[in-house]
Image 1 (cartoon, rainbow, N blue to C red):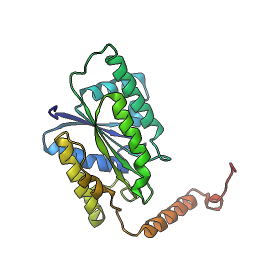
Image 2: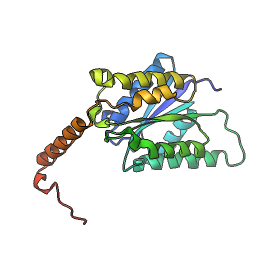
Image 3: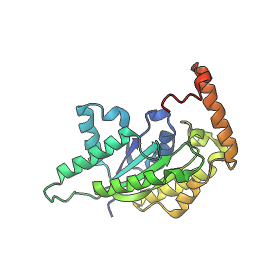
Length: 231
């Protein structure tokens, strides 16, 4: 087992540091820092838009012992920029080790998914994509965490969310311990983070619908909210 020295956190949301993905990943990253792990944070959307930045991005991936990727769910799968980044990583691996050259170290990969739906089960297809990516890249797949009601986080620090984040924090604490030991994320961690942030799904849906209408009103398209221009 490789000793964990360096971890890189990839933010897969276009919102960057203001996203729910950043909040979730940063919580784990801070726990790794407390254990003297060197960490680096990369916002995917801003780091693969030029050839020079892409080269640096891939160099940082190669230096890491652990890669943690946190991203939102987009139509049951990954955001386009995340797919591009993962493709670049796999292509770079094949380029570097195409002549049966064995990598110096075995790197590990873990994913954190959040969706706007109340049900975290919506993330299952995307988790399978991450698992397949890890296989293609030659990474040791440590598993993934699926979280529903991601809109409630909305870029806030988990410590500021009060009681609704209690189970989520407990689960991430367990997951961080697993990652520190280069072990697969435990069922206990997955079950804790799988629990809804609020038990009343109807309330979450109601607030979400009201927020949607408020944004439509704010942007002057409230009367068009039910339009179906492509049907």
